[in-house]
Amino acid sequence: MTLRDGVFLGIGLLTSLAAVLSVTSSRVLHAALWLVVTLGGVAGCYLALGAELVALVQLLVYVGGVVVVLLFALMLTRAQGPEVVPVDVSRARRVLAAWVSAGLTVVLGWAMVALVGWESRGLAGPGNADIGAQIFDTWVWPFELLSLLLLLALVAAIAVARGAGVTEDTQTRTGGAHRGSREAGAG
Amino acid sequence: MSPALPILLAAVLVGAGTYGVLARRHAVLMVIGVELILAGAGMVLIAAGTFEPDDYASGAVLTMFVITIAAAEVVLALAVFVALYRARGHVDLQPDEASE
Image 1 (cartoon, rainbow over the protein chains, first blue to last red):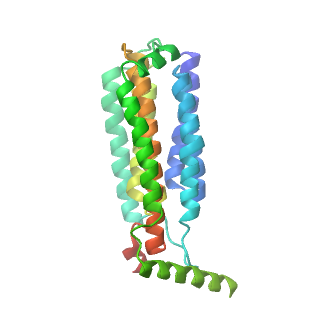
Image 2 (tube, helix red, strand yellow):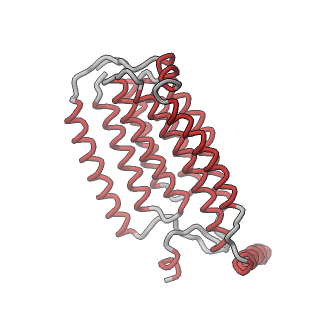
Image 3 (cartoon, one colour):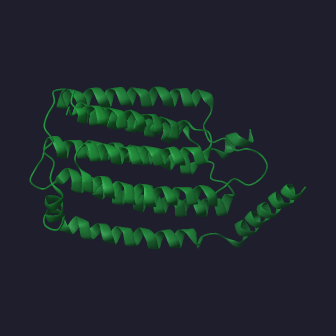
């Protein structure tokens, strides 16, 4: 067991713990913050595997972008009214979901470890210069398609979030809910 | 290092993400589960690209593609949730059981 194994094991255990907490925390903000720890830990694991470029992209896009978008989504969709809306399904379904996901973890881990084995190997990943050259050589068309996908996603997100399909009736109903909660808060 | 370690971490991430998708009824928290599954997929890709390298740097490049597509997916999911919130006043995925 080398030093790199130890470092990866430490970061990996932290990441696993944070992942489990981010799907079991009953407070939505805590779940999003545990997701930050999880994705940062995944970036650390990429670093330990020698993939610096992917680790930095993970940090920039996920921790800097995706989590901020998720936090915005949590704040914009806060439940109205005094009653507390539960964030988890019923207890029986949670037990079933835990069994399903634990079984999936065991089957996936067992099958893939049987493929790669436990014996130690050297890190032989591509360097940053190789990755850059390959992106603009082999992968250039998928890369350009991705820019088109991002543009489409942004335009579609604006179109959907502006509520083109929302009728006047539902808008007044939501406005009523806003007023109702405000009155409840004042009372 | 042993290739089994990142593979096991990926399995744990996918398992946790599956639990999040199955057991959450808040829509944004369900998307957190999807993000964990995608992180597990990226971990497998990076491990494959590190221990079984090829000439095209497939592991690293495909992981960055997955990260980009996940960003686009989250943006669209946020837009759908905001529209859902405007229409219904909540983003609960099981509103019928809540009223019982």
